[in-house]
Structure formats: structure tokens, C-alpha cells
Image (cartoon, rainbow, N blue to C red; front, side, top):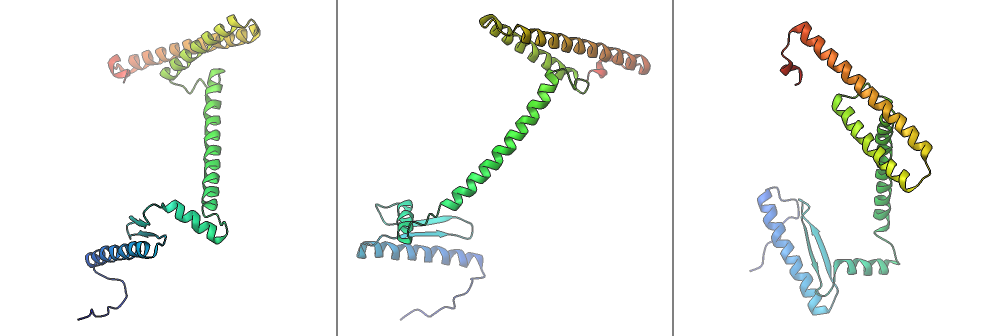
Amino acid sequence: MGRGKIEIKLIENPTNRQVTYSKRRNGIFKKAHELSVLCDAKVSLIIFSKNNKMHEYVTPGLTTKRMIDQYQEALGNVDLWCSHYERMLEKLRKLKEINNKLRGEISYGFERNRLGADLDNLNFQQLQSLEEELISSSAMIRERKISNDRGANLLHVIKTRTETCKKKVKNLEQVNRSLMLGIEDKYMVHPHYLMM
């Protein structure tokens, strides 16, 4: 007794659809294997489910890449990967451009702070961090100066700027202290609450 023909249309019930997909996928893989063994054919079969899960069959001893390369040769060296590679290169170029732009903006801000500009917007911790950075930078510069006698002029400029920054930091510390005392006196707030 033979099987009845079924109408080829989307199966509405998701469970039935999954069962049918699984059975038919296994059936087509079995047919691909039989074709490969019986006829000594090179077979590659790739299936993606609705959930983007990949299933593949490749003749034993081959790889999908070798099959795709052979496919390209049969088409006359059409490079299937070229457009994808070019898109990836363009995306990489754009990301590098954005990265360089952001690095420039960040270093510009740090450089302006190192040169003593825009210090009014920094809080006490940022000023301390900047001071430590300036101290370590000046120590490195001194070491270079010792090993390389040139650059006395540059060291003087940096030393002057460092001293200027230290003075600004001390000045801002004094302003901060006087403001804190003013708030404490004016509102009679316990000093513990001011540090939060």
C-alpha cells in the first residue's frame, strides 16, 4: 500500500512542522550520502532551520570550503568572498576612523589639562590624579634629560608648567576648604556630612 500525496504548503502547527523538518532533513541527508557513495559524487548540502540552526552534509574526505572553492572554479573564478571581505574592510576602516577620532578627543582633553587649561572644571580627585601624572611625567623627563643632555629648555618649560599646575591645585584646595567652612558655618552642618 503506497502513501497518499500531501499538499505542499506551510505546516501551520509548529510541533508538526518541526517533526516534519527533522524527518525530511534526515531523509535528504540520507539521499545525499547514498548519492555520494553509489555514484562517487562530491556532495555538499547546507540547511538552515527557521531558528538559523545550521545542518550540513559533506562527502567524507572533503570540506565545505573545498566544495565552495571548486564551485567558484566551475563558475570561472567568481570570488564569493570578495564582496563580504570588502564590506568587512570598509567596516574596519570606519571603526578605526571612529577610534582614532575618539582617541584624539580624549588625548586633546588630557593634553589641555596637562598644559594647565580647563582645570576649573576638575574635582579634587581629578586634580590629584593630574598632579600624580605630572609628577611621574616630569620624573620620566628628568631621566631622559640625564641620559640625553639635550632638552634643558624643554625640561624648564615642563617644570614651570608643573609648578603652575601645583599652584593651581593648591589654590583650588584652599578655595574648596574655604567654601566647605563657609557652608559649615552658614548651615551649621556637621563636617562628616560634607564629605559625602
